[in-house]
Length: 225
Image: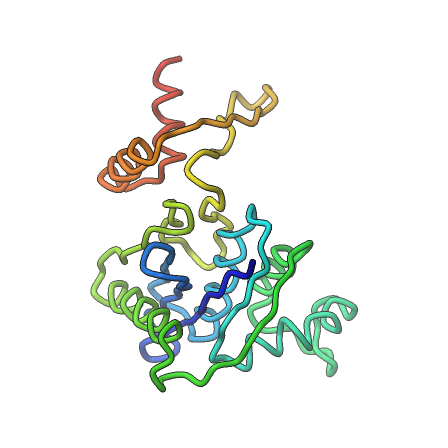
Protein backbone atom coordinates (compact mmCIF):
# COMPACT_ATOMS: atom_id res chain seq x y z
CA UNK A 1 0.00 0.00 0.00
CA UNK A 2 1.17 3.53 -0.76
CA UNK A 3 0.34 6.65 1.22
CA UNK A 4 0.10 9.68 -1.06
CA UNK A 5 0.65 13.05 0.57
CA UNK A 6 1.37 16.61 -0.53
CA UNK A 7 3.91 18.77 1.29
CA UNK A 8 4.12 22.53 0.88
CA UNK A 9 5.52 25.67 2.44
CA UNK A 10 4.61 29.34 2.49
CA UNK A 11 6.31 32.58 3.53
CA UNK A 12 4.72 36.02 3.60
CA UNK A 13 7.45 38.31 2.35
CA UNK A 14 9.96 35.48 1.96
CA UNK A 15 11.54 35.84 4.43
CA UNK A 16 8.71 36.63 6.77
CA UNK A 17 6.06 34.77 8.73
CA UNK A 18 6.33 31.22 7.39
CA UNK A 19 4.25 28.08 7.42
CA UNK A 20 4.46 24.46 6.40
CA UNK A 21 1.88 21.71 5.91
CA UNK A 22 1.50 18.16 4.74
CA UNK A 23 -1.84 16.75 3.67
CA UNK A 24 -3.16 13.25 3.01
CA UNK A 25 -6.89 13.82 3.52
CA UNK A 26 -9.14 15.87 5.78
CA UNK A 27 -8.54 13.47 8.68
CA UNK A 28 -4.77 13.28 8.27
CA UNK A 29 -2.83 16.52 7.93
CA UNK A 30 -0.62 18.77 9.98
CA UNK A 31 0.67 22.33 9.82
CA UNK A 32 2.97 24.68 11.67
CA UNK A 33 5.52 27.40 11.09
CA UNK A 34 7.57 30.22 12.56
CA UNK A 35 7.30 33.97 13.04
CA UNK A 36 10.19 34.41 10.61
CA UNK A 37 11.37 32.03 7.92
CA UNK A 38 11.59 31.36 4.20
CA UNK A 39 9.45 29.47 1.74
CA UNK A 40 12.18 26.86 1.30
CA UNK A 41 12.32 26.31 5.06
CA UNK A 42 8.58 25.68 4.99
CA UNK A 43 8.85 23.25 2.09
CA UNK A 44 11.61 21.27 3.82
CA UNK A 45 9.88 21.26 7.20
CA UNK A 46 6.69 19.93 5.62
CA UNK A 47 8.60 16.97 4.17
CA UNK A 48 10.42 16.36 7.45
CA UNK A 49 7.24 16.37 9.53
CA UNK A 50 5.48 14.10 7.04
CA UNK A 51 8.21 11.47 7.35
CA UNK A 52 8.26 11.82 11.13
CA UNK A 53 4.50 11.49 11.39
CA UNK A 54 4.46 8.29 9.32
CA UNK A 55 7.64 6.70 10.66
CA UNK A 56 5.79 3.82 12.33
CA UNK A 57 3.85 2.86 9.20
CA UNK A 58 5.04 0.05 6.95
CA UNK A 59 3.69 1.60 3.76
CA UNK A 60 5.44 3.22 0.83
CA UNK A 61 5.21 7.01 0.80
CA UNK A 62 4.60 9.08 -2.32
CA UNK A 63 5.42 12.73 -1.62
CA UNK A 64 3.95 15.33 -3.95
CA UNK A 65 5.94 18.58 -4.02
CA UNK A 66 5.75 21.70 -6.14
CA UNK A 67 9.31 22.59 -5.09
CA UNK A 68 12.10 21.45 -7.39
CA UNK A 69 14.50 22.68 -4.71
CA UNK A 70 13.21 20.13 -2.21
CA UNK A 71 13.10 17.25 -4.67
CA UNK A 72 16.57 17.93 -6.05
CA UNK A 73 17.98 18.42 -2.56
CA UNK A 74 16.68 15.08 -1.33
CA UNK A 75 16.99 12.95 -4.45
CA UNK A 76 20.03 14.38 -6.26
CA UNK A 77 22.22 16.63 -4.14
CA UNK A 78 22.10 15.29 -0.60
CA UNK A 79 24.42 12.28 -1.11
CA UNK A 80 27.15 14.55 -2.49
CA UNK A 81 26.67 17.12 0.25
CA UNK A 82 27.11 14.44 2.89
CA UNK A 83 30.34 13.21 1.32
CA UNK A 84 31.69 16.77 1.37
CA UNK A 85 30.76 17.39 5.00
CA UNK A 86 27.48 19.09 4.10
CA UNK A 87 29.10 21.51 1.69
CA UNK A 88 28.34 22.23 -1.95
CA UNK A 89 30.68 21.43 -4.82
CA UNK A 90 32.21 24.92 -4.57
CA UNK A 91 32.88 24.45 -0.86
CA UNK A 92 30.16 26.81 0.33
CA UNK A 93 27.88 25.62 3.14
CA UNK A 94 24.54 24.02 2.32
CA UNK A 95 21.58 26.27 3.00
CA UNK A 96 19.09 25.08 5.62
CA UNK A 97 21.61 22.44 6.63
CA UNK A 98 19.98 21.52 9.94
CA UNK A 99 16.69 20.75 8.24
CA UNK A 100 18.56 18.82 5.56
CA UNK A 101 20.32 16.69 8.18
CA UNK A 102 17.04 15.97 9.95
CA UNK A 103 15.41 14.95 6.68
CA UNK A 104 18.36 12.71 5.86
CA UNK A 105 17.93 10.94 9.21
CA UNK A 106 14.16 10.63 8.76
CA UNK A 107 14.59 8.97 5.34
CA UNK A 108 16.72 6.12 6.63
CA UNK A 109 15.02 2.77 6.13
CA UNK A 110 11.97 4.28 4.45
CA UNK A 111 10.42 3.37 1.10
CA UNK A 112 9.50 6.60 -0.62
CA UNK A 113 9.23 8.43 -3.91
CA UNK A 114 9.00 12.13 -4.70
CA UNK A 115 6.88 13.47 -7.53
CA UNK A 116 6.82 17.04 -8.77
CA UNK A 117 3.44 18.69 -9.26
CA UNK A 118 2.85 22.17 -10.61
CA UNK A 119 1.63 24.51 -7.91
CA UNK A 120 -1.49 26.66 -8.01
CA UNK A 121 -3.18 24.83 -10.87
CA UNK A 122 -5.92 23.11 -8.90
CA UNK A 123 -4.15 19.89 -7.85
CA UNK A 124 -6.37 18.78 -4.95
CA UNK A 125 -3.72 17.57 -2.50
CA UNK A 126 -1.25 20.32 -3.34
CA UNK A 127 -3.88 23.01 -2.95
CA UNK A 128 -4.95 21.58 0.41
CA UNK A 129 -1.36 21.60 1.68
CA UNK A 130 -0.76 25.09 0.29
CA UNK A 131 -3.91 26.47 1.93
CA UNK A 132 -2.86 25.10 5.32
CA UNK A 133 0.74 26.28 5.02
CA UNK A 134 -0.42 29.76 4.08
CA UNK A 135 -2.94 29.76 6.93
CA UNK A 136 -0.15 28.89 9.38
CA UNK A 137 2.04 31.71 8.04
CA UNK A 138 -0.89 34.12 8.30
CA UNK A 139 -1.51 33.05 11.89
CA UNK A 140 2.08 33.84 12.82
CA UNK A 141 1.80 37.17 11.03
CA UNK A 142 -1.16 38.00 13.27
CA UNK A 143 0.54 36.72 16.40
CA UNK A 144 -1.89 33.81 16.68
CA UNK A 145 -1.36 30.08 17.12
CA UNK A 146 -1.89 28.18 13.86
CA UNK A 147 -4.23 25.21 13.54
CA UNK A 148 -1.87 22.24 13.87
CA UNK A 149 -4.39 19.84 12.35
CA UNK A 150 -5.27 16.28 13.42
CA UNK A 151 -1.87 14.87 12.48
CA UNK A 152 -1.46 11.25 11.49
CA UNK A 153 -3.42 8.98 13.80
CA UNK A 154 -4.84 11.92 15.71
CA UNK A 155 -1.68 13.51 17.13
CA UNK A 156 -0.39 16.72 15.55
CA UNK A 157 2.95 18.40 16.20
CA UNK A 158 2.98 21.50 18.36
CA UNK A 159 4.06 24.82 16.83
CA UNK A 160 7.86 24.78 16.93
CA UNK A 161 10.98 26.74 16.09
CA UNK A 162 13.09 25.79 13.04
CA UNK A 163 15.59 24.04 15.30
CA UNK A 164 12.96 21.94 17.04
CA UNK A 165 13.09 18.19 16.59
CA UNK A 166 9.69 17.42 18.11
CA UNK A 167 7.43 15.33 15.94
CA UNK A 168 3.93 14.01 15.68
CA UNK A 169 3.09 10.52 16.78
CA UNK A 170 3.11 8.16 13.83
CA UNK A 171 1.12 5.30 15.28
CA UNK A 172 -2.56 4.49 15.58
CA UNK A 173 -4.25 5.72 18.78
CA UNK A 174 -2.31 3.37 21.04
CA UNK A 175 1.37 4.27 21.23
CA UNK A 176 2.81 6.97 23.44
CA UNK A 177 6.34 7.89 24.33
CA UNK A 178 7.94 6.64 27.49
CA UNK A 179 7.46 8.57 30.69
CA UNK A 180 10.73 10.27 31.64
CA UNK A 181 12.05 9.46 35.09
CA UNK A 182 14.64 11.28 37.17
CA UNK A 183 17.91 12.10 35.43
CA UNK A 184 19.62 9.11 37.01
CA UNK A 185 16.87 6.63 36.17
CA UNK A 186 16.65 4.77 32.85
CA UNK A 187 13.70 5.53 30.61
CA UNK A 188 11.10 2.90 29.84
CA UNK A 189 8.82 2.43 26.83
CA UNK A 190 5.16 2.45 27.80
CA UNK A 191 2.34 1.40 25.45
CA UNK A 192 -1.18 2.47 26.34
CA UNK A 193 -4.26 1.24 24.49
CA UNK A 194 -7.37 3.37 23.95
CA UNK A 195 -10.66 2.97 22.20
CA UNK A 196 -11.29 5.44 19.40
CA UNK A 197 -13.73 7.39 21.59
CA UNK A 198 -11.27 7.51 24.49
CA UNK A 199 -8.47 8.70 22.24
CA UNK A 200 -10.63 11.45 20.74
CA UNK A 201 -11.57 12.61 24.23
CA UNK A 202 -7.91 12.64 25.24
CA UNK A 203 -6.95 14.60 22.12
CA UNK A 204 -9.71 17.14 22.74
CA UNK A 205 -8.63 17.62 26.34
CA UNK A 206 -5.00 18.03 25.29
CA UNK A 207 -5.88 20.65 22.66
CA UNK A 208 -7.86 22.61 25.23
CA UNK A 209 -4.82 22.53 27.50
CA UNK A 210 -2.56 23.67 24.66
CA UNK A 211 -0.47 20.51 24.71
CA UNK A 212 -0.24 17.05 23.12
CA UNK A 213 -1.84 13.81 24.33
CA UNK A 214 1.63 12.48 25.19
CA UNK A 215 2.49 15.49 27.31
CA UNK A 216 -0.93 15.44 28.99
CA UNK A 217 -0.50 11.80 29.98
CA UNK A 218 3.02 12.49 31.16
CA UNK A 219 1.80 15.38 33.31
CA UNK A 220 -0.96 13.24 34.81
CA UNK A 221 1.48 10.44 35.56
CA UNK A 222 3.98 12.76 37.21
CA UNK A 223 1.25 14.36 39.34
CA UNK A 224 0.61 10.98 40.95
CA UNK A 225 4.20 10.69 42.23
